[in-house]
Amino acid sequence: MATGYSIRVAEAIQSASDTLLGVRLGRTCLELDVPVTEVAQRLGVTRPTVYSWFVGKSDPTDPAVRRRVEQYVEALVGGG
Image (cartoon, rainbow, N blue to C red; front, side, top):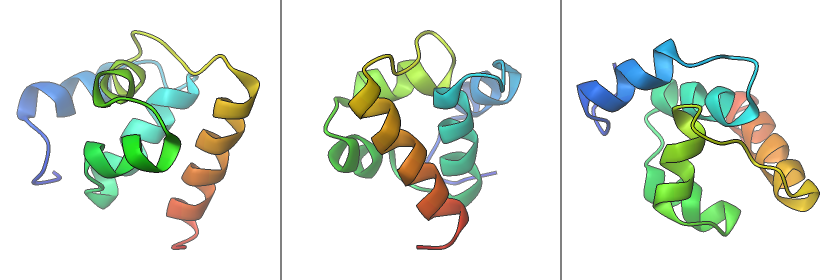
């Protein structure tokens, strides 16, 4: 498990619906140990927003933000 995440957050990410883009982002960040602060800065949103996405409480709805999230996930998975 990633060292930068609490057990509670890690469990919430793992149990959330993987059909949501934000949850996929969360699982990727958890796996690669990408800090929430870095994710928030790169995507131009707040840390609470990122946590909300990670655990499936909400999902990015703004088309421009969704595109940035999709591109960020692709870059993380691709190693870039």
